[in-house]
Image (cartoon, rainbow over all chains, first blue to last red; front, side, top):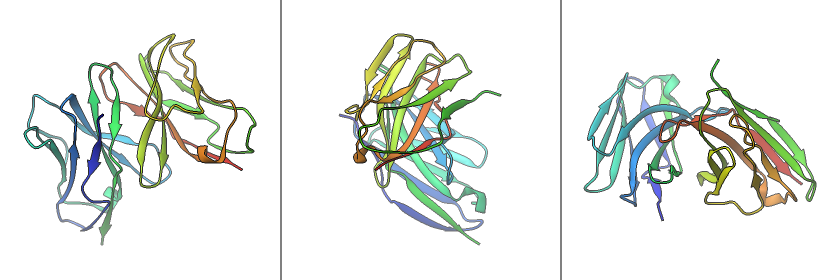
Length: 112
Length: 111
């Protein structure tokens, strides 16, 4: 079955630096990938998504890269701010049954 | 305001006492889903529904039931809760194949 996992459970970043969060997926049937941010006490919030026919997508201060060859995606956050401290999840969606599988999450802590 | 609402937000109950957690969305989404979140395990899907009267098992459906009689509502039912169902539960909705919007979560403790 599908599994989506993150490489590191925690990441500590100096304020102003760039953050990179990595994620690997096992099933090439996933064709839509989403990054979510979860702040303490809240539900996950959409950050950015990417379809499998793309390699890169940019948003405001965030970039997602998808490497289908090695089944890897990453989330890059530019100029990390204290408000970026949260748990970040990658998720893969299969379009045949719309099943969404989540990784375990990476906790990002921003140091002042 | 477009949103997913869940009730209750917090619940403490005892083993075997049936409970229902409600979920409602006002975005006319076809797809709705329930997840549980446990430390170190991320979010695991319990059940999902692609439309009214259509429900399917996710990764961890044992001990749970759902129903989808109306498009906007997707209640999660625990007929006989057990302590291993103590968890943080999230409901989500989306258009088919699109971004999922999550509710605020329900923290359930089963004693």
